[in-house]
Length: 304
Image (tube, rainbow, N blue to C red; front, top):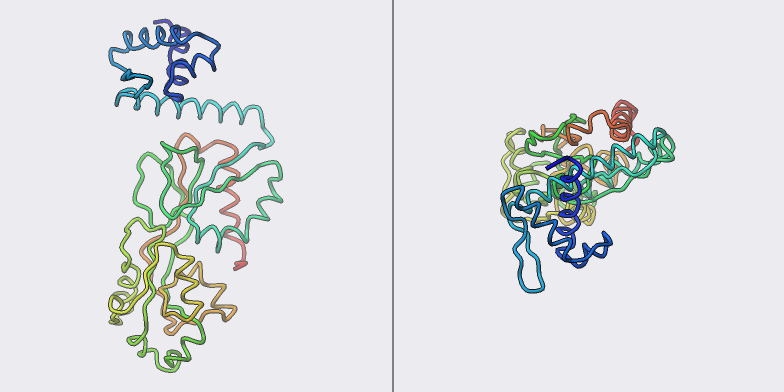
């Protein structure tokens, strides 16, 4: 199969697989459905495996067909990205960023006006999600993870370490006399959050802090649990209990007095924030612009 013919057949397969319809593929490519079917049959013969299961009025991708579609989609996306970079040397276009809700709102948002000022022609699209994104399934250029597991197929850059510290509202601290007697935390209602950690264990951060501080507390007795950190933070602000705060995200609230800490003992969270992106994107201008901007933000005085 010569190269040109291979590209034609693969392109036809991508369109047909995207629509799961020979008729819709024919409409897009200005061909007849029978011509599409003939091309797919020709490709299947040359590849040596089936791409579709042909049901009545329906096409279903085989497992091999799904694998080939994923590879084609990733390859076409990267070709499009390279074309954009060649065409837009002044960093125009859109950068897709995956980020957890709490990190996006508390740390990233206050800094984004500076990014906008530095790169006015570069659009930024945020995919906000508590869990990690799948670079193979979604169009994501970069993602910022907290406590992520290792992704050997992705390039990563360490942003900063995280520390843990108990926090609550001044009213709740006054109610239990926590500032005068931190030992009264044993009588508190404990607030747990599991957002954006790879270990989706609701109690893990309180366990880490208790072990690191050598303070035993009944954190799994009376509690509220959230898989969204912003709600956990709202619960603490509304005097519902003591939250295990991530210092980088609650620092501004402590400085403003909106939250207080019954025990100003910082303990390593044993997790950190990292920037992830595909290895082939390391020298992509848009990706490098954002990664380098993050480094500048990390070295600048805190604005939180």
